[in-house]
Image (cartoon, rainbow, N blue to C red; front, side, top):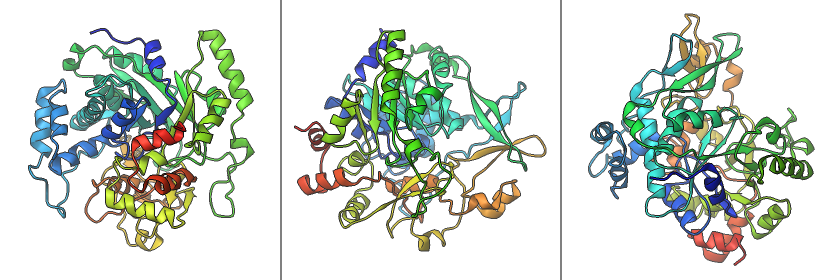
Length: 490
């Protein structure tokens, strides 16, 4: 097999529209495939794919596609183990608990690097990312991307590797300055032992020291040639070019975008209690043009780049191109159309609330990631204080855990959205727990994969105008083609 060079991969990504990689399985393989086959760039969400895969199997895998993709996974023995462990013919009972994946635990190597203690979790992460990318790419030759949060550092390397085994073309990574990713990709392409820095807090003083977390590909995978995908850095504004100069391409995602946002430069809050984004957070397009022109002179070509956050319209695309961008990334307007992973009754309910005047709040403290997070204000979700206050605080999935060093020198995990007494016992500060919500349990509810009794956490961008235009023009079941035609002004 002839592998594509990075230059060829980058050229293939130059589409006017990137469909954003949203939430936990909101951007499914089927949604990404449809955007890509219609000439744009489809992107799957890589967050918590091990939960997505194993819970889909427990729900019965009615289409058989999860088992089909697992049959293509290079480690046949482990793929069989996954099916034997998690597949429930006909699906589990609705009120039955899911068999969970192992909770992340860590051990120290002799060189003071860390690794996931449970090898099964590392392999599940690899297999699950392979499955989602394989399904997104199956049956066509167009490029597919996958989106990750750099905050979830412990899962990053096995996730990247699984996506690369399936031939992913682009990696979109935000929620952190992922400057170590290019070297990691080069290492993984050669099936080498690979490390990334990962912060480890002190048990009591909260001082943070970076350790390295190590991932070692299995020997069985080395039979497969790997293509080096393009690294698309997600940054908030022009300053990201200074902080992340070694990305292959960029998405500039402003503070109106849904999901996690970059912190505001100001530490104060506005009159609504939201981060006070101001002039220091805005894009300096003149600086951006100067940087890209200088980089093009050095490297012989302009790096592709897209604008995101309120650009999902014909006017937004035109404005982006006037600023020299390749195109735009769209999120909310894609995520609330027919074909996204959002559980259909919930999708239709939220659309009705949006059309009836629903609003979005940028919470400075809801996400235990430490980043601001957009919440659609709905009485039917965990964002409702009456429901939030009666939920039992637990941390049983662990996507957003922080690592800390215990007084005994071991590596523990804690999360500010877990039981408050447990968090304090682990050396955490009570003030850090205030208003924290559990995204790990809330986001899977949105796509029909939530634990029994958990409530959804709904996010979208601040600007709902494109969604309202689509609903008014095509109804709540507007399609991918409707969205593309609208933005391209066809």
